[in-house]
Amino acid sequence: MKNLFLITLVISIIVGCNTKADTNSQKDPVIGTIKPNSQDSDMAKGCSSSACAAHNYDESLVVQQPDSHVDDFVKCPVSAVVFKITKNHPKLTYAGHDYFTCCESCATIFKERPDRFIYL
Image (cartoon, rainbow, N blue to C red; front, side):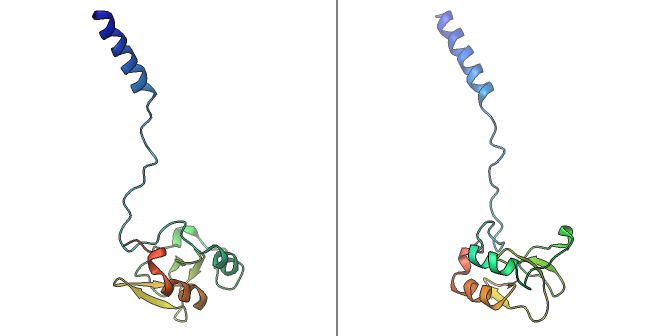
C-alpha cells in the first residue's frame, strides 16, 4: 500500500512540475474597444499605401478609440491603419461611442457590420 501511495505521489509531482501556467490567456475585452486582428485585409492593403496612413509617427502618441478627438493618432477599426484625426475624417457613433475611420470606404464597411470590429 505504501508503494502505491509513493508511486502516485511521484507521478503527481512529475505531472505537476511539467504543467505550465497559461500565461497567454486572453483578458476579457473591454466593451466598446476595437477587436484586435479584425481588420479588413483588402482595406488594410489599400489604406496603408494611400494618403490615409500616417507615416513617421511616434507609436506612443497613438491613442485608443472610442471617444478620440481631432489631432489624435488612432488606428482605424476597419483597416488598422494609424492616422491623425482631422475634422474631415468620418465619425461614426456605435453603442454610444464615437469612432473615426481613415476614409469613407472604411466608414461604409464599419456601418455594415460594426460588431465585426467592436466588442459589445
